[in-house]
Image 1 (cartoon, one colour):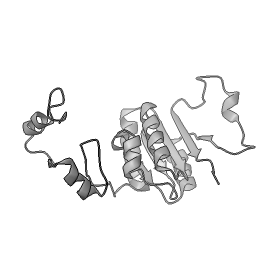
Image 2 (cartoon, rainbow, N blue to C red):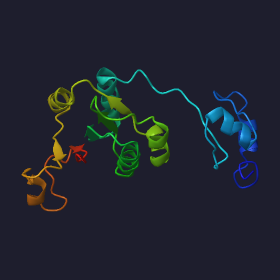
Image 3 (cartoon, rainbow, N blue to C red):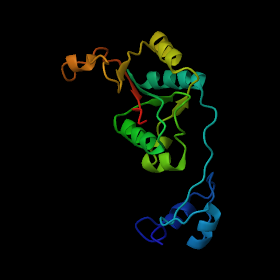
Amino acid sequence: SLFFDKPVSLIECLSEGSDSDYHVLIAEERIMGKVLGFQTVRGALACGVVPSCRDEDWLFRYLTQVLAKNTYLRILALDGVCDTSNMGSIIRCASAFGVDAIILSEDCCDPWYRRSIRVSMGHVFRIPCVRVRQLASSVARLSKEFKVRSYAAVVESGADLVLEDLDRGKCPGVRSGFFRLREADTS
């Protein structure tokens, strides 16, 4: 397998860290298919524990730590994103734009769903995704405690186009930016 040949040499990497927190099992592809319940063509599979301690209080402690290192916060709030491929794509793009955390409304799909992880290309492991009970109150708390300004992308006719009136690079509040996306209703 290409995982065991150079340049990847997974076996060499694993043997170097003998006290690791993970285990590697090697199986034939047909056995992996039986375990998974579907055939895989990639030849690799990972299993992990989804972070369960991430709530609004955890988020604010984390953002305090981020601000101790940076002069700004970049936060993305998602409201009602229900397609796992879209979720993965949004997470991947958020990573490219240096987003510090992603806040999810209660009705968003699971960013840890297999398809979301795959489409995010693993970036879901880099950016904390935190589900909150009330997105609006969390945004208000961000504004109050961290002076975060909100900028929204709303997919609705008649929405104000405030950002179109700003010159490129002249977004007020250089210290922080906040973006909120709502997935378009496809029904």
